[in-house]
Length: 131
Image (cartoon, rainbow, N blue to C red):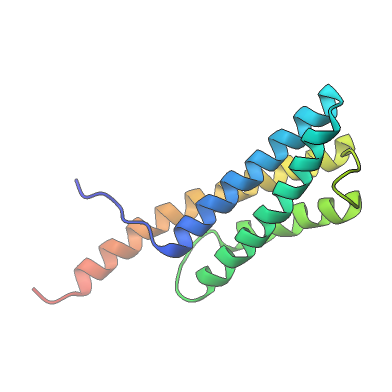
């Protein structure tokens, strides 16, 4: 069985999902343990994840199929929650944590759809190449 190769856009998407997940985890841990350093780190990680996610979305516009809508929804939801929160030093409220959680879930869906469609694209390319 052939291993699926990952393109730059796929790696950006996966990286954005990992960074967003880390930001959510730090936010939640900081909020529930009442540790300001954790929620500050979480807020900053979310901004970094949004930047990487935006780069992943732009690279998917060029030719990738699948996951674009889920990624756009994730970035908009997390971005809105981050904007409503204000600075990173402000502790996140539970509704904002819920919005971040849904955004991370949507980013994970985008990764899954992108990987599924990458396999379909590879099969299509193989069938189109002359023998």
